[in-house]
Image (cartoon, rainbow, N blue to C red; front, side, top):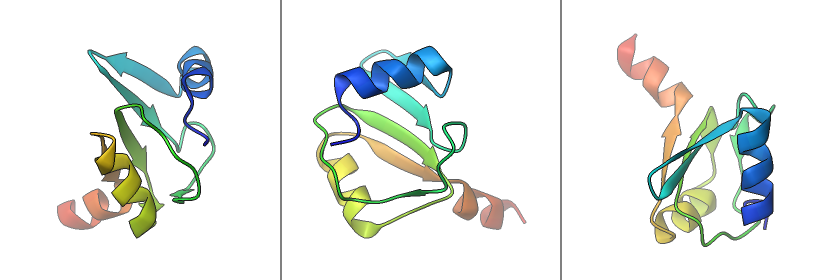
Length: 79
């Protein structure tokens, strides 16, 4: 899977992610990604900020105890 401990640690080092208590907050836009797909797996608790995501990605992230914040939805809600 893409979100292994090593991959997330690299994102933290690059400034695209931060650690908040027991959760990693990852801004995929800063990392150069516009959509989160559900092709990989993770056991890490993640809060992912991204423009869009697949239903399978949401299912896998929430199953690991995390959440997804969609920038597209947030922008629509405030417009």
